[in-house]
Length: 82
Image (cartoon, rainbow, N blue to C red; front, side, top):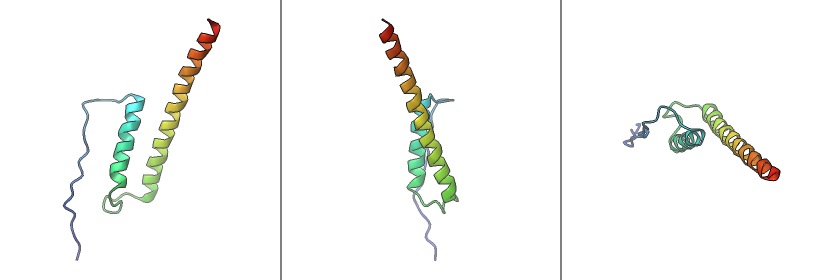
């Protein structure tokens, strides 16, 4: 006997056509958390795919940190020249 889940998972949509980097990362992380909380087999998602998705999110976070550090470095160099 199999039991059917009555829980419905709905993704919240956005009116944005594209996201800024930080918002895109936040959106991906939230969607990942929602999917991760569910049974991957029921969603027909492999553990490998979920792991790759998490790695992509982590990479996106790291790129954002590096970009922000680059902006701060440029501002500090400008201050040093003053």
